[in-house]
Length: 134
Image (cartoon, rainbow, N blue to C red; front, side, top):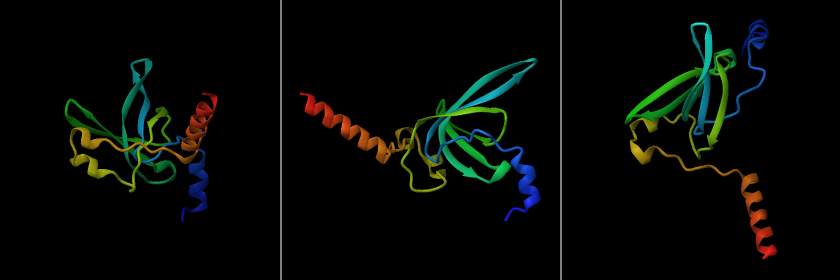
C-alpha cells in the first residue's frame, strides 16, 4: 500500500494523457532530445518486452535488433521526455516479461499478431457485406 502523502505527491507528476500499450506490442517511442538550445524528436522502434514498477517509478523496456545486435532501452513511463508512443502491431503473448526473446535470432524474434475480438467481428461484417453486394 502506498501511503496517502506519497500518493498525493506522486499524482502531480503522473502523465495526464496515459500511454496505452501492452507487452508484446511493436511500438515507436518518440523521445525529446536536447541538443544545445534546440530540441528534436528521436524515434526508437521495437518490441515492448517488460513493464515494471508503479506510479511515477513505472518503466518499460523496448528491444530491437540493430545490425544483428540486440539493443534494449528502458524508458520511464511518466517522463516528460517521452513525447508519445505509437503502437504499430499488437503481439499475441502469454506472459508478462518477454526476456526469452533475448536468446532468439532472426525470424524467431517475431510474435504472432493479436487480433482483438472487435476488429475480427468488424472484418467479418465487412466480408459479409461484400459478398451480399456481389
